[in-house]
Length: 111
Image (cartoon, rainbow, N blue to C red; front, side, top):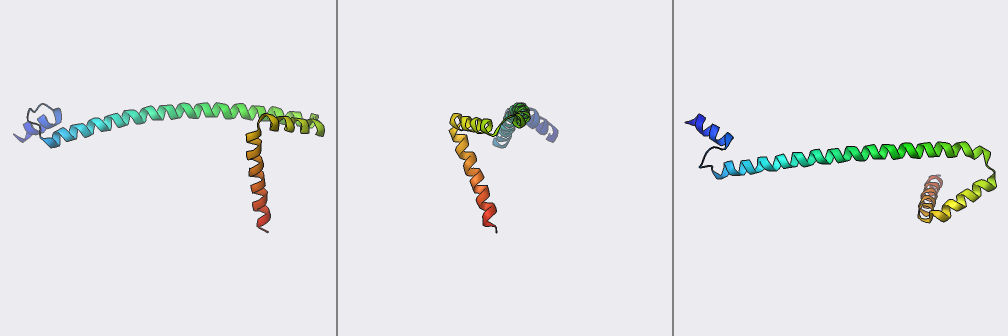
């Protein structure tokens, strides 16, 4: 009798499932949905990491190319380049300036 009751509970073949069995099945389905959602999220995160890795590699390559050009430029050329960048990207320029100012302020205040 106990074995039949256990088998009916685990297989869902009992017609008089109690509220606990019904609740357990609902929890099990919820867990299964959560696992599927977690797997999907993990896959998307992996894709995001791969994309970020590509962007970092591209940025590093651009930076290396730019560093190679610096010795060939005069101070006036570098000044024009920085001024042009500041005009094209004012928000980033302000944020970088704030960051550099905060860093210098922290270093000088420790004296």
